[in-house]
Amino acid sequence: MLEVSGLRVSYGGINAVKGIDFTVRAGEMVTLIGANGAGKTTTLKALTGLLRPASGSVRYNGEDIVAVPVYQRVKMGIALVPEGRGIFPRLTVEENLDMGAYSRDDSVAAGADRDRVYALFPRLAERRRQTGGTLSGGEQQMLAIGRAMMSRPRLLLLDEPSMGLAPLMVQKIFATIRAIAAEGVTILLVEQNAKLALEICQRGYVMESGEITLHDNVQALLANPQVRRAYLGEDL
Amino acid sequence: MDTFLQQIINGLTLGSVYAVVALGYTMVYGIIQLINFAHGEVVMIGAMVAFTVIGWLAANTTLPPLLIVLIGTLAAIPACVAVGYALEIFAYRRLRNAPRLAPLITAIGASIVLQQLAMMIWSRNPLGFPQIIPNTVYHIEGATITLIQIAIIATSVLLMAGLTFVVYRTRLGVAMRAASQNAQIAGLMGVNVNQIIAATFMLGAALAAVAGVMVGTYYGIAHYTMGSLLGLKAFCAAVLGGIGNLAGAMLGGMLLGLVEALGAGYIGDLTNNVFGSNYQDVFAFLVLIAVLVLRPSGLLGERIGERA
Image (cartoon, rainbow over all chains, first blue to last red; front, side, top):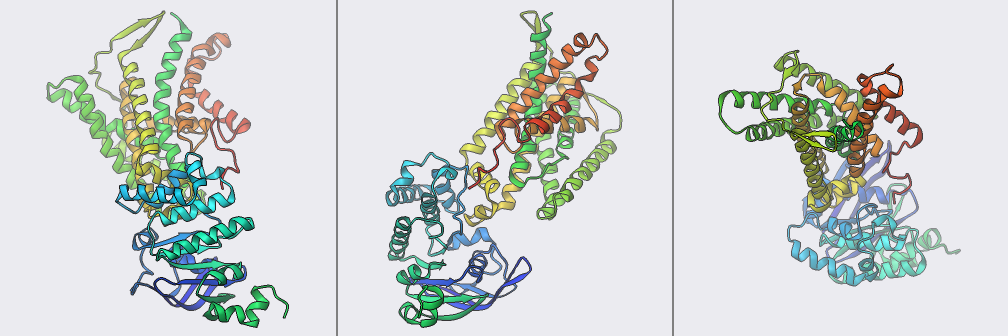
């Protein structure tokens, strides 16, 4: 579904991503793990078109999408749950969700999807008239995921969904991600919390200083001493 | 004659015009944090185009006066929308990510260009706006209100209600607000942010066109420099209300009109006629200075730190 090859991205004068290759097959859950500053977020920004790659190709369903503007990619089925959640602080919860469906022209079905998001996150339904800025971090993360789902994505990119959340909330968010995957949505998950990410995904790529240094299925990665020492916090 | 009531009426009339113009400043600022100092010239272009159309229709047809003014306004709107769009595309778009001083200077440059163009087209002389609407005068409680004043206030209220509806109840409006809060994320949602910014300029310009017709009809005169001072005052109104805030622009415009009218009405009495009502223009800028010193975010401005 997604094939990235030779992707190089500079960001603020630094080469944040230095020629990486990876693939995500339809229906898969793949994670990109790595330390802060490894280039994970930059990679996602290149996939969504927020940053323009210096070179390399991003093929989505066989088509090179490097030249496709940001606002057209959501219509192709790519949605991002951004780092820091990116809620519109002065739009209501409901308006935030409606923005998620902005690219769709079937308002009736979008309304039904909104009800599904509310069913999934009853807390959002309770707060539908509140502005996004008044929500707690966990509620904002629910809203960000719900908003991304409103576009009916086929490929969902998640950037650090666990960041800044209480453990219980993290569990809930990850359970939700799993449920979304079970519906057939392909998932690329970027996480600093490698343990969590490796637990729910099938394959993983390890990123260090802008390069992919390791990739394998998650069982192999979880068993890899280097990964265990560097990302799972184990003394070996 | 009751000075107080009379000045309230005059102030509301003036304030309505300021409010409509201030909305143009505040919408553009809200979405790209740019003060479009050429906005006043757009008002002037609106008055000029309406002047030409109304003058021609009045001389060559026997249409009812109200219809003539309406056609004049309908002609001014697309002209101003085109100017607003051109400003965005040619003057500001390339400078979207430039240091803030660059688009500011460009705005002043664009304003000079528009003024000079208008001077070349419509001459450097003040043009008498055709007085075709019978200016009926109504007396209330010792003060007077004219038909034109009533029309201006009513039109402004309608425009403000219409704009509020667009911004809060339509798809375009939600996209505008989303883009103003986080343009990148709005793009991710499928919003073509450039289109929304252009639409914002055009919406503001359409309001400016109507304001141009209102000012021309009210003062009975159109001149190629009429936009500068009016634009600056409307800008003061937008800052007074809290720039970037729609309700603020409306409130700021009305308040500024009232302050000006009451100030002009009483300054003679208060200073033993040392200063007269010709000092009217001073009040807008006194208000601007006071706001900047006492409450820089404006009356309804957002407190910093509200962003998530």
